Structures are given as C-alpha cells and as structure tokens.
Amino acid sequence: MEELLQGSEIDNLKQGTIIKGVITEIRSTEVVVDIGGKSEGTIHANEFVDIGDLEVNSEIDVYLEKLEDRDGNPSISFDKAEQKKNWEKIAENCVEGSIVQGRVRSIVKGGLIVSIGVDSFLPTSQIDVQVPKNLEQYVGQTYDFKVIKINSDRKNIVVSRRELVEEQRIEKRRKLLDKVKPGDRQRGQVKNITDYGAFVDLDGLDGLLHITDMSWGRIQHPSELLKQGEEIEVVIIEIDRDRERVSLGLKQLHSNPWEKIDEKYPLGAQVKGRVVNLVPYGAFIELEEGVEGLVHVTELSWTKRISKPGEVLKIGEDVSAVVLGIQKDEQKISLGIRQLDENPWEAAKSKYPIGMLIEGEVRNLTSYGAFVELEDGIDGMVHVSDISWTRKVNHPSEVLQKDDPIKAIVLDVDIEAQRIALGIKQLATDPWEEIQNLFKIGDVIEAKVSKITSYGAFVELDHDIDGLVHISQVSEEHVENIKEVLTEGELVKSRVIKIDKNERRIGLSIKAANYSEEDLAKEQAAFDNIDASGDMTSLGDLLDEATK
Image 1 (cartoon, helix red, strand yellow):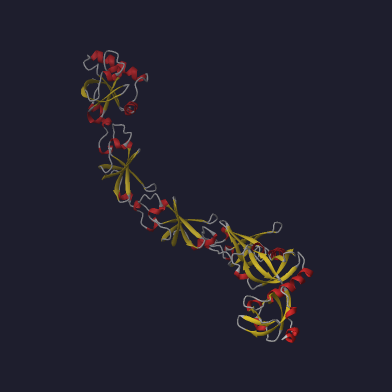
Image 2 (image 1 turned 60 degrees about the vertical axis):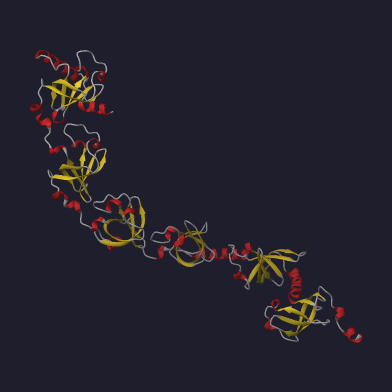
C-alpha cells in the first residue's frame, strides 16, 4: 500500500489549482473524470459547449475546488479551469477599448453574462441602441463586444455591444444619406410610435413618418395602422443631409384618390358611404379610403328641424347621399341626404296659395311670432305684426298659447327660404279703414279703463280699438298723478276730441264729456297743441310704457 501511495499523484493535488484529468465515463447530465485521487470527480454537462465532442479516455484540464466534498469525492470544474486559463490570457492581451468576440451565456440581474474566454458582464443599457424588453432572444448568440472596463483585482470585465452597434449605424447612415433621393422606396422597421407619427429605422437612419402621410383616409392615431417592430415599405419624401433627417410617406405608395374625384363623383350622382364622424354642424361620410364628404345638418331633411346629426345618424352606419358640390383643391365634397326624397316645399306654392284660409295648431312661440303646423314637417309663421290690426302685440303669448287651434290667411310662400307667412288680423277688415264710420269727433262714449300710464289712460272702445285720455284731459283741476283719479277697470264717460287715421290714434277727454259745442272746439284746439308740441306720446309708446 505504501508503494502504491508513493506512486500516486495524491500528494500533487492542491485545491485552487488546474490539474490534468482523464474522462472515464460520459453520462447524459454529467462527465466522470479521474484526477488520480482517492475517487473520481464529476462535472455537470452544461459546463461544456457540446458534450458530444468529448471522448472517453481523453485528457482535459479541470479546476480542483475541493479535495473531498461531504461524500468524500473531489469537487472539480471544467468551466473554472477554462476561466482561470483564459483570464491569464485576457490579462495579457485584452485592454479597455479592444474588440472581442463572445457568446451570451445567461441572463442575470441588470444584464447578461457573456463568455469571452472568461465571464464578462453586459449591462442591459449596453445591449443595443434601445433597451430591449426581451433578453431571452440574446442567450446563445455570438456577437462582437467592446471592452469598456477591466478590474484585475476582482477579475471583473464589463463589455458593451451598443457602442459597436452605434458605430455601425453611423456608417450605414452616412452611406444611406449619400445614395437616397426623394421618391425612393425603402424598407424599414417601426422603431417608435407617437401621437403625431412614427419613427422608422432605415437600417441605421431614422426617418419620421408623420400621421398626415400615413393614409389618404382618416386616422385618429398612428397605432391604428402600425405596430412597433413591424417591417414596412415607405417612400422618401424629403432629405435634410445637414441635420441627417428624413421625412417618409406611406400613403404615397398609392395614387391620390382626389386626382380624378370629379369623374368618379359627378354632381347629382347618388353615392354610398359609411358615417365616420359626427360634428355639431354635420356628418362626415367616407366614400372610399381617403375620400370623405360632408352632409351639413341642413341637408339631412326637408322638413324636420334637426339640431344635431346624431339625432338621425350613427357612426359606422352605411348611408346613401347625393353629390351637391366638389372643391377639388380643398379636397371637400358636399353631400345631401334629403335630396334622395322629393322636396315637399316644391308643391307648397300650389298647395298653399296666397289668400288661402288655413287651420292648424300653434306649435311654437318665439319673440317675433307664432309657428303653426300646416302638415308634418311644414309650418307657417304668424308674425307679431300680423296678429291684430289695433293692438300692439309685443309677444305672441299675449294673444296665443301653444297647441291653440287657430285660423289664418296665407300671405306669402318662399320656397327657397322654406317659409310660409300667415296672418290672423287679415281674417277681419282693418277697422281703421272705416274709422270715420265708427267714431266721430264729439261722440260721447262710456267705456272701461284698460291701462294707466304716467301720460294718461287707455279706454277700451268698440271694434277692439283703444282710445287715449291724456292726463291733461282727465279733470278741470291739475292732475299730478293720474292713478289718484282713475283706476283700471273703472267705467268712465269721455268724448272723442281727436281722430288720426294715419297715426291710428283716437284722443278722448273726460272733462269735455259735458262741454258745449263752443267749449268742445276750444278743448280740441288745446289738445291739438299738446299733440303738436310733442307733449303727447304715440299710442305705441304709451302701450310700451304701460307694459313696463
């Protein structure tokens, strides 16, 4: 035994050194190696690039970590032996800034482990120009790397692939800028997508594909057409060699649909399309990719008063329309939907001749008149000035209410403006036309006070006519405040002292009710002087004052 031990190499085995070993067995997950010790050691298969290249009885270098583990077997490593040998070579031949080839071995926190003979660290930020999201794609790949830091004490090396990629991109960019020209087609990869467009990598040269150059049609966001990382073909639109910038186009790969737009969509033609957008003033209809027409809200219906296009249309709905106009330079097409139906206003002139008596209900009241429904979708309007011959109507609600049934006379029909003018007062004769037969100067009238103002009092006469008692005609005594003398609804006896057909006014006098003919003539003259001096306000002004 002493002779055997003396002949063995056990005494030569030292921990932390590289020793020779002989492969005695190759298993599926490990390799058994005889290092001349008391027992054989094993090495995991993943420490070898390809276990199939090994042969039994072949000699390899291994690193002795421990003479014996807990089971009494030596702990050895082929990978660490290679690392130790290679580190010595690296330390002699590799310097910071040198280019080395390496194979990505694994993913670690913050980056990748790259074997360049020894393990080196590749930070995530140094893998590529843009930080990659998926590191798995690099494992097992071989690349060139630039050594950026060596720590001999810690036996630590940091490498970068990004610097080499950037240098390659700069060279490719220069070559590409020298040869490309506007109109050229290039293939590139979508590098980044923003709200206003997409940046496309043309093999080292980044170009901007603006959203307006992506499609002849309507798109809200570039992501509707493009995905990051996809490869596309684009057209070079503009080149700024000094700033190394390129403008790209995608829609320019296809012909402009507006070039022969008037041939495809002549005026009056019926077309079909899809509603793509609704705005307060109308609806946009896509006729084909890149071609949209606008249906103004007023062109949706002949009779319905549509305030918003969303009341009758929905986005995505297929509709038919008629071409009303084309502005080729501005790339605008005007469309109409109501033109698909017969215009009911075309027959309105013959259906509602001037002077015709109509019956209907008050549909709506405005400050200037009342709308009367003649038929579904067609209204006539009674202006406030056509409600009464004798009354000053400030608002139609003073006389009419919504849903009231009324009769009126057709005064005018305007087809272009789609208006029918109606009149209520025209149902009766204007009493002022025969006022001389209804009232005479000197007539004594007993009637009710309807309104009182600072100027005087209004008295209700027959035929819906108001007479005015000026404050000076109330009493023989001076009246400072007429409300102290008269009240609304009071019956008073007065005498007609003034009739002005042109101004449509009747002047009354309470104090002259019992005058003689001579006294009446004097009072009438005095009343005329008041009127001529401007002291007397008009009937309309007094009515306004009364309303206030």
